[in-house]
Image 1 (cartoon, one colour):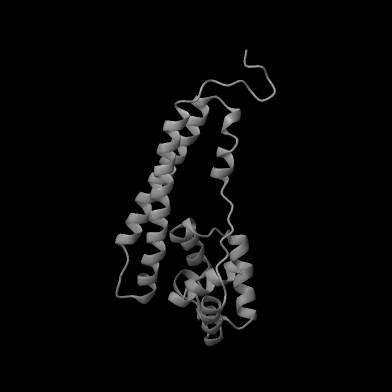
Image 2: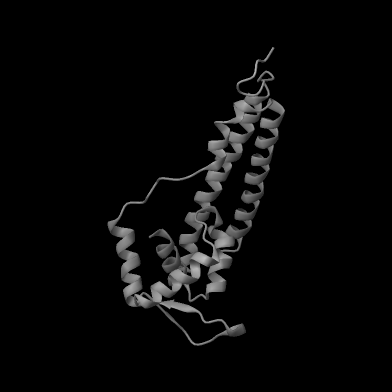
Length: 182
């Protein structure tokens, strides 16, 4: 359901082609929702078949942008106002941290340094995106809220990685699981 709502949200902001939408998933949305072109295009077809979006005339470079219909806007508004957000999530980084005891502290630190750099790089990217917003546009005003949520999460993740590096620096060398350390 969330991919459907993500697509409706993007198209409600302005008409977009499948190509444009995929660029959004690789840009602004990569911090909150991931979708591959093999997921996006079939869902666009289903949304059109359900009358929630419609194709516009062919545009630049042969692209056919979609626009939201009144029914699509009603569906999006209903989703926002009558359902609760799904807070379940998968986080491979956190899962991996539960297994860090199985490797040498130097390897654990290398993993954490990589995480720290990842979060710092993404922070830089989000801040650039924030600067490019036009706050006279309603969709960009809402995007500011989402981007700021991403900034704050990434700042917290970077802070956690820095803290974890300090903790792991105090760990003694360890033998592989099932092996005697001595």
